[in-house]
Image (spheres, rainbow, N blue to C red):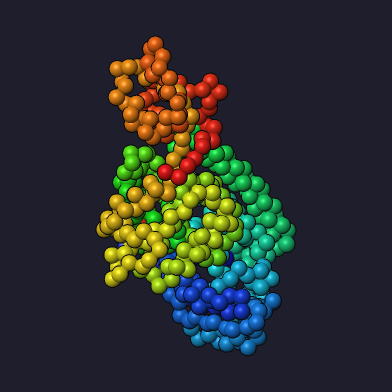
Amino acid sequence: MTALYDSAEAPKKIILVSVETPETEDAQESLEELKELCENLNSQVVLSVLQRRTSPHPATFVGEGKLEELKTAVENLEADFVIFDTELAPTQIRNLEKALKTEIKDRTMVILDIFAHRAVTAEGKIQVELARLQYMLPRLKGSYTALSRIGGFNQRGAGETKLELDKRRIRSRITVLKQQIRELQARGDLQRERRKKDAVTTVAICGYTNAGKSTLLNRLTDAGVLAEDKLFATLSPTARKLTLPDKREVLLIDTVGFIRRLPHHLIDAFRSTLDEVRCADLVLLVADASSPEFRLHLEISEQILDDLKAEGARLQVFNKCDLLESPPPGGVCISAKEGKNLDALLDAIAQKLPRRLIEAELLLPYAEVGATYALKKNFVLEEEFCPDGILLRGKLDFPTLKKFAGYVRLPSDWQASDPAEEISS
Ligand SMILES: Nc1nc2c(ncn2[C@@H]2O[C@H](COP(=O)(O)OP(=O)(O)OP(=O)(O)O)[C@@H](O)[C@H]2O)c(=O)[nH]1
Ligand SMILES: [Mg+2]
């Protein structure tokens, strides 16, 4: 399995193949997307083939006749790869390699190649390596060159014993990587636990790849995150503090993009990254509204969020509205690039975010009595006049709690990590 690169070398010639069945009605759109994925890896698609069948052929994905056509096309067009828009079974790869006499890839492999190429942080690299190895392990026999991109495995001649040895090495590498990922996950859990204790509210920016998520984070917080016109530019989460119009501070988190048929190995391997999304109080579902497919992109993103069991509220954000004549209905329309309508977005975020209320007592000296009016109006349930001040009991939000920190008396059994009662603000 040779990886595709987006380097300066001559583009690889590629033939794309898909099968449309009654179950896969979006085959054409998915094929277009695969083409874009390949072009992100410096490849030139020389032919796209879509076959309609009631179901994919179990042995070769496409039917016999189509296979013959493909064989001729590979020869005539001198294709370097034939890429199938699906996740092929190991035996299908073997059969296809034998029949077409060229290297075979599938959609999962292309996505893994992109991720491998984009991974910069140590965390990203571990996650991608695990996903790749898990994907490759059952496919090793069919494609012996699979190991060429993985460090630490030297390739001598092929052979059953060597293959078994490599498999064992890969398995033990997988065990090591899984352990490292568990540690990352534990670190993430700890961080979230601490945030919860400090009543920090988190907002995750999610959505299809290239929707403008990193651009939005940069625009709102000067984060300086890499934002580029390429798929999966961001793999590791970046968090920055953001102050909302109502003075609340939240943590805004940019993270990995989604795509249809996101390989499940990647979802598993990126669990620690995706935990940020799963646990966020609010998810901003950003879509590129200038794409004719953006409603579908939103649907796919929502589906992935459901699969992840994302807990937070959701807010649809239609980005790139600078490219549109009239804004589409149903979401907050913005232009992250041009900074348009961001005030409305911030207001919508504040409105959607649950306000955490913490039960507390305040012993306010009589000199501070002026503050009681605002407090009583918003939070106070009871008041009592004591010799050294007014004792107020009620539920406060975190900014107020911070403001009056010097006067606050929390109940003795109160713990900051208690799930504070939440109401919609
Ligand atoms: N016209 C226009 N382009 C935008 C806007 N927002 C982002 N872009 C462009 O869209 C491309 C992708 O932006 P990113 O911010 O990297 O997108 P992303 O969602 O973070 O993408 P991944 O990290 O790859 O998932 C870049 O070329 C941006 O300049 C916008 O409001 N209008
Ligand atoms: Mg990004």
